[in-house]
Length: 390
Image 1 (cartoon, rainbow, N blue to C red):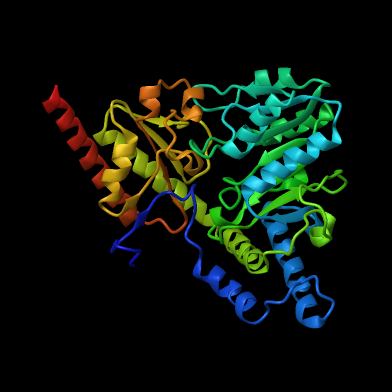
Image 2: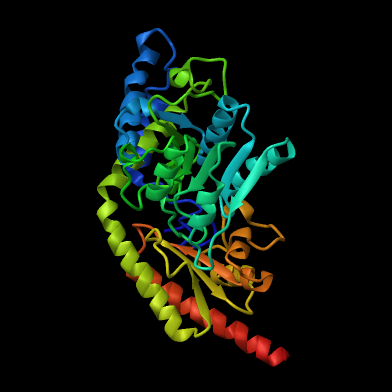
């Protein structure tokens, strides 16, 4: 396969984005070439598209175990879904000025909540343990009558550590507090059944499950009061104004269908990830697997190599056609250490020596072996150079 100037790409940055499945692209094409009308039109050429959107809504609902397709609202991204959920909850609870989130939330939640803090809201950050697990005692203590919203991710995008939403949701319900869950890194990796949990809303993103970029979804539990982020139109049952991104919605639907059908493959991905980590530990004695003691989504590995610069590692591996990252793609280029790793107790030096390696259902044993070989080789070269300079 050829990508730009590279003759080969070994891709292990699937938490940033995934390769669109060929079946997804195939499903999208007719909505660019044949059925390109506006679904809000009265004439049949445009209006016939509505049925395709509704089928897509039902398919995305099925991926997360939502009982009703009407509980799915299509957006432009997981970030928009997160922002919409926060905006709606606070608008509907104007007299409550306290927001509870974890200290390791995705930047799309963390950032907007810090902006709200500047506008008079009190922001409570729930700490995590060194293992990456949420501090449940601190979380329980934060649930007071003044809380307008709790927003907690289901899986951390850097470490892959799963948070106990099955415990968090009933606690929020007991205190009559809306719960929004960022499920972007969870869908398609573990079975989800939102109908069995009393959560208020859940965010999704198509490009994390081998779908197209530029489309996401927000699950809003039936009976939940809701305020649109974008108003002025009747699209999405009056919940988001603006002409629908039809082709991408269809692509999201196909990606959701494929993710559900391939969910059993994630056990193979977990074994591949675990074997890769065990092989690295054999060759690199001082490696630290962040979150390795906790339940994680099966595809994610966060590895700290003390004394090495992860950005240099990423660039050196890139010369071999290997794609990995230092952490969240949303913070790439930042001079500050990852706040997720700092929250785990890492020093700035440790945080700067951390790689995130994220597998997918397309990852192979041969690719993982090649990555292991080149990673160990590169780490040893870096160690040798550091020794020579000393």
